[in-house]
Length: 173
View 1 (cartoon, rainbow, N blue to C red):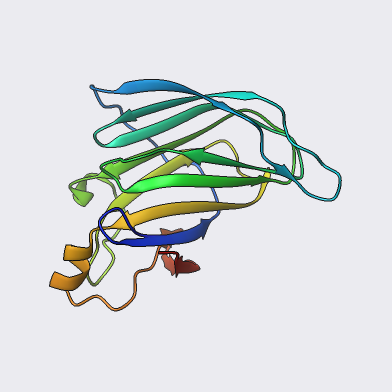
View 2: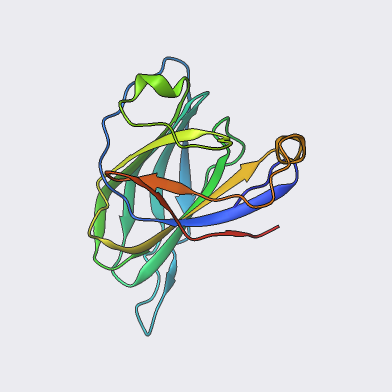
């Protein structure tokens, strides 16, 4: 999704590993979750402690624990990279899971070709959840002024895996 100053979207991503780098200033918060939603008698995961570390250009979520068949919503809040929520649908039990999202600026520091057209942000995602999820929804926002100033009609989430691939993306607000 895209919002914050006006527009929200959601994109479904498949998690895979990417190299990461570190940043210096951050705020760490431990989020207590009441568990996710279960499917067909799966039930919730109970109370879970997730460590959420947010800095200017990076979000790091650690200690993710989710039972198979359960979804978990992680609210990131306001962040410079504009991802504000992640929903994880576990197909297998997840223990000690993590997701790291880094805003890449400038893009040239990563050895992947630039995407043609207007690009709002490049994000690098690193995770150990691959193969344990049926899907992951990434909610992100795009400043309304950027959309209007660049005459953008549609916003899409793209993934690079040997080539750029447009992912299913929809506006939620």
